[in-house]
Length: 331
Image 1 (cartoon, rainbow, N blue to C red):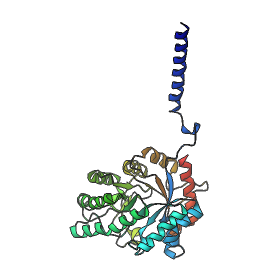
Image 2 (cartoon, rainbow, N blue to C red):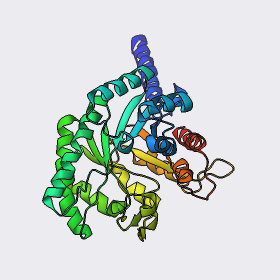
Image 3 (cartoon, helix red, strand yellow):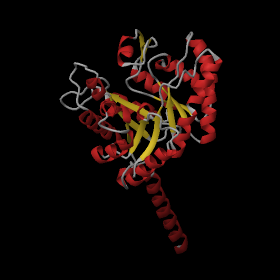
């Protein structure tokens, strides 16, 4: 009887300990150690567009600026600041060595002005596809997870969709062979419609396809007559979509997120996007497709350079203000 009683007590103690362990698995990880943040913070190069366009900063020096001035260890490049260096192996070697020495992660390359992946003309569409190959190759060499592309074309939304499934789909297949994602940013024209973009991604149906939701790009405009600031400003607004609903719809396909900011109040809150409302949508929507980074894209410095009269912060101050909001959202 004594042995039976001892065994019963041992089983009871064991089950009690098991219950504690089971309960512990549902407690916040901060009780047992530091919780892993939902995402890491990267810096989009366009945040420093004013300095880059003016020549004060070079693309090669961007990673050091991110690390040394802002304490950011991950960068997102913009193709327009590379000039003709995408296939320059010596340039790529130096850039990769610099980021390795700095301990900076190359996250992605935002690619512009390489043609319309949804062009109705098959030869123009194929040319646009091939124009992007060099950026996929550069991204692979640098260790990026993706390139960001624009999705545009001519014709009705349905016609652009059909052509885009072909053109974008072919580029995604090229990226897949290299192990590089090809992700679409909601940007300027038809891709600012989140429902349209989701439908396109579902039709392409490839794990290397995806999107880069941008907080500030849910205003659909006519295609600009010129790819200039004036051209964008003068392009007629067709429709404005709800940014919070748009991000929610895009998050299942997102491999990254672009946290765009323009203005801040005296308490440091962004006045063009409510981060207290937006970031829970981002955190809740993270999926297996997400590659771990939310990028700072402060446009105020560029707007000031272009002569905007509004009270924008300078580039460095705007980047720091955006970083503070993202750091708050990581807790």
